[in-house]
Amino acid sequence: MISKNLLRKIVLIFVFLIGAICFFDEVSYAQSVTAPAIPSISVNFNAGNNSQNMSEPVELLLIFTVLSLLPSIIIMMTSFTRIAVILSFLKQAIGAQQSIPTQSMIGLALFLTFFIMAPVGNEAYQNGLKPYFDKSITQEQAVVNIMSPVREFMFKQTRETDVKLFLELSKDESLKNDNVTLEKIPNSVLIPSFIISELKTGFQIGFILFIPFIIIDMVVSSTLMSMGMMMLPPMMISMPFKILLFVLVDGWDLVIRSIVMGFK
Image (cartoon, rainbow, N blue to C red):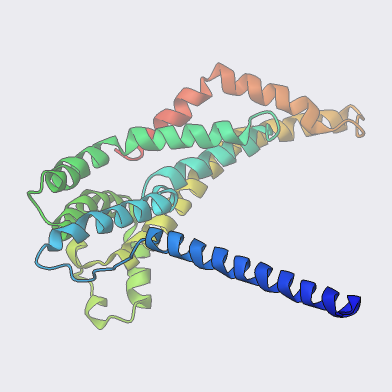
């Protein structure tokens, strides 16, 4: 007679063996089914003789690089710096820092920059971008043709003293002479010279804009002191007179005309 404990052990072992066989059978079946579904991956690094396939990715990379640097290019190599400085001084001279939104001033400076730089941009497009898109010139020649009108514009607006400053600071001995032409000046010298010249011109025009408004402030302050109104802020009284003077002389027309004609 087989005892109950021995029978129970045999049944448990039998059940365990059946479960293990079923489990491993399902695993092997799943592997046999899914294994053919795994795709094979192969990477071919041999470009062969078709080197033209690499031009489009490189061109896209260059385009995105230029787009990422576009704000810096607009600020450093166009008329934007001078216009922004002049409008900033004008806003401070009137005393309307809170009344005139900064976004409006930046937008006005940006569109004035587009207006002033339109001939330069058109020349760069006709001589550089358009022939390159037509596959008539190489990338190197396109860059030279695009930079040529921009360099000419910067050179016309740059003071000779600023160019000489960076030529003296340069370590290139071939540039340290008085007969350096535009073709020999590198961009590393021309661009900072142009920026300094634009800042200097913007400060000079800003000083001229401050003079009539300072006179109004002095007159109002003297009048208030003579009347004994020392607790009354002079800015509160002078600001309406400044705005009135600016509107009567058509200040926006005079300022914008002076800015645009300064680049002609």
